[in-house]
Image (cartoon, rainbow, N blue to C red; front, side):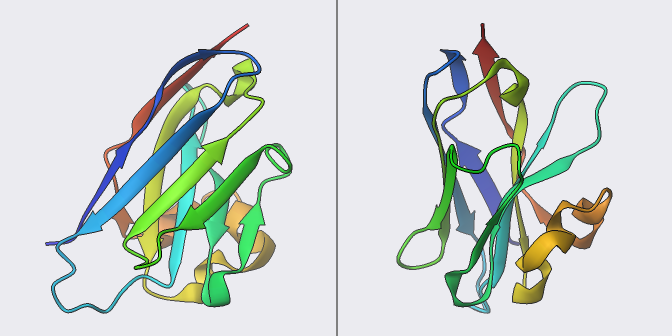
Length: 133
């Protein structure tokens, strides 16, 4: 059974940094995930995509985090990271790692369409990020 496990969340002051990690385990057939992404959900708000990495390691970011967040994968593609710099109070949310076998789900602007999170069948349990002003 595939599991995604996030870590690295915490509480920081505005302007601070955090690095989130997500480890994939249980992918016993070794098929891999060609699309992996970070989503976040704040209380009372819809889940939204933050960043994704797809085919040929192409990355895409929400406008709200461009220039501040960096998504990357480990060399074995079983780990996903999100380096978050210059954090703002509006970044406060539960952050989730998600995966899809098909790389195209992380390509382009579709990733940021409302409700697109429904295209992802594999999810971690989430890690809380709290940014104080």
